Length: 154
Image (cartoon, rainbow, N blue to C red; front, side, top):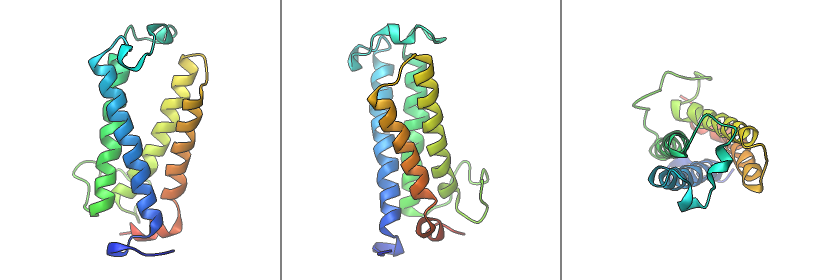
């Protein structure tokens, strides 16, 4: 695999880009739902929440903003600067890899779970659900590439 600055492979940069893409999109989407809990900023009708426990998009917006927005951006920054995590460093599936590497894998699972639950509760699957399921799978696939894991091994 081709190496670039600081020894990162192209695969490492692809992972960082995927995390930033997810995080920035979720910050804007979640932020729009927080600012407009009726969904009007995103042109999302409230009837989409019919089978959920929510009367507005406020709580889903907060979750989207923080868990799928700020969290992936935080992980992307840790992947870029290769610093230990301030919070969550010890929550690892694989103790031979950095906390950021492990949490990158977790983000893929969280995204797939979020979209699956959302599609179930909304009683429908749209193209955007399929797109984000594949984004979650792509994050997981790139995270477990041997060149990426080797780079973030401790």
